[in-house]
Image (cartoon, rainbow, N blue to C red; front, side, top):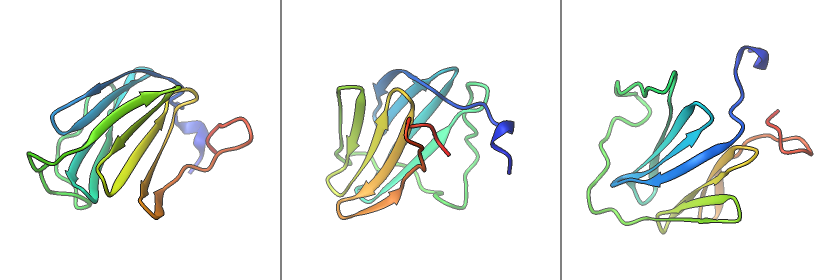
Length: 117
């Protein structure tokens, strides 16, 4: 698949903590992270500013109320931490990764300037 067919997301404009996680405004789109459980998050990226709310086979569960998590921002990086895993969002250039306490779950491939490959 050619990357030229995609519009890269470059900069986080704002991040808002929600009842279930967070929503980041990234250029003209949104990134939503919902905490399903301490070891499970659902990540969605909007298309045209709207989320597809149809259930997916990957995670067809609803966030559990009462699951504790923290959202902290420092030095252009926001961290959502559940106690077992975290989602780290770099604001500029935009990137995110997901890690369990002892291993990577998702990491972007980046060049020396931080651009996604």
